[in-house]
Amino acid sequence: MVDLLLKRYLWLIDTLKRNGEMTFEEISDKWDSSSVNDNGVVLSKRTFYNHCQAIARHFGIDIECRRGRGLNLYSIVNPEAIEDNSLTKWVLDSFSLGELLLGNATISDKILLEDIPSGREWLELVLQALQQNKELEAVYENFAGKKYAGAIRPLCIKLFKRRWYVLGQLTEGIMRIFSLDRFKSLDITDITFAYPPNFSPSAYFANFYGILVTDGKPEKIVIRTCKELPGYFRSLPLHPTQHELATKDGHTDFTLRLVPTFDFIQELLLHRDQLEVIAPQSLRDEIATIISKMSDRYKV
Image (cartoon, rainbow, N blue to C red; front, side):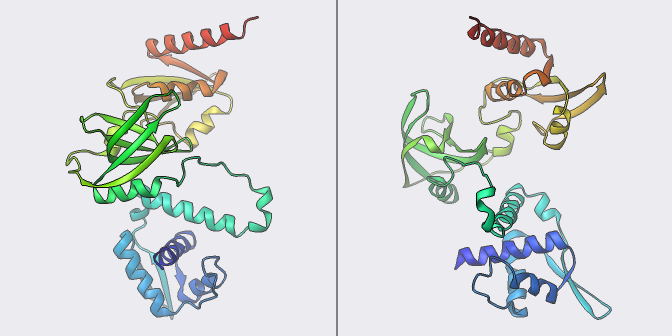
C-alpha cells in the first residue's frame, strides 16, 4: 500500500512538473492512461486533494490552485523544492524514466540498459541502518583481496559508475568506503550509535571526484579538450567546481579545483587524446608516466 501511494505521489509530481498548469480534468485524463493506474481506478477530487497534502508533507512540494475565468488550474508553486533537493530530483527523474520505459514495454528488445551489479542486494538493509543509526555487522572482501570482518557505522551511501557504495566509520574511528557488491554477508544489529553531529556527507566528498578520499589538498587543475569533448564537459561537468576558461585554436580549456585521486586520474585517461592536462605540472608528469608505462606494455 505504501509503495502504491508513493508511486501515485511521484506520478502526480512528475505530471505537473512536465505539463505546468493543469485543470483537474486534464490531470484525471492523464491518470486514466498512466501505467501506475494498472487497476483502472478513477481519480476522485478527494483523493487528489489528499495526495496534494501528502506530497507537501513528505516532499515539501506545494501544489496549489489558481482560479480564473471559470478554470481551476493546479501547479507546483515551489519547483525549487525539487531542484534544490538532489534526492527528490534523482528519485523523480528515475520514476519519470521508469514510466517512459514501461510505456514502451512492447519494444523492450530494442531498449538496452546498463546493469548495476550492487543495485538492491544490500541497499535496503544499509538504508534501514542509516535511518535508525544502527551498526552493521559485515564480512567484506574487495577485488584486491583485502578483507574486513566487523562492525560498520554507516554514514552515507553513494552511487558511482554503476556501483553503490557505503561510507562507514569503523569501531576504531577510521572512515572506509565499501562497495555493496563486495559484501560476503551483512546484517543489521541492535547496537545504535550517535551519528557525528557535524558530519556532512556532501562536504566530505566535496573536494574529490568519485569515492576515494585522501589527505591531499585541493589543487587548481587546468585541462585542455578538443574535438567533441568540450560539448560533453559542458553538458555533464566532471565536478561542481568545473569552469570553462576559453576556446582557442580548436581546443577549449577548463579549470577544476579538487584533489587528483586515482578515480579522477582514471577519468582523465578515459578521454584518450582528446584531453591534455595543462596544470599542475605534478599531475601532468604523473599522467605522462602512466601513459609511458602503458606504451611499454604494447611494445613488441
